[in-house]
Image (tube, rainbow, N blue to C red; front, side, top):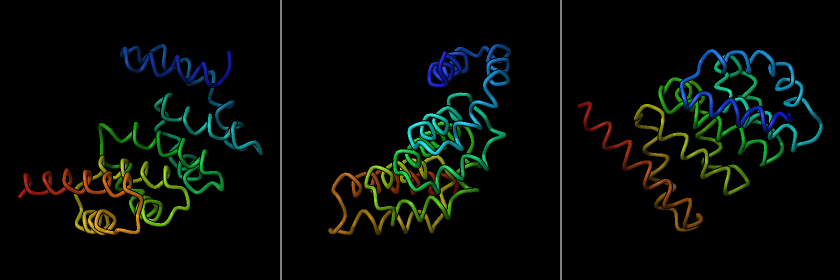
Length: 166
């Protein structure tokens, strides 16, 4: 079985709530995930960073942060997919990485990576600086239309959440 197949199986186990089997699979693949994340091949690194989210590896957040800073857009994108998945139930992960996500959303050279960073910000708490950043991106005519739409949508959702807390 490959790491990609094991990660897909882990995701199925997590979705079905089989925590015992998931823990066993995590233990079996822990070293392979670490090794693949350090590979010189960006494709192996991308699989590893995506696997962190599929395995629900909350103890590998520092490793995941390194993936967000990788030279390869494919690796950064895979790491963002994991951040997005791991942060669905708790805003803590996004909140801890907020400055990095802000930077990625506004300046990453890859448009897909920028949109993924914006999507991740949706799972964080509704903080003013995030809403201001997203509104700025949404109103910037020099930005890609899909990026502007993503920023507008996430900003509106965060504003709505912030208003509900008031």
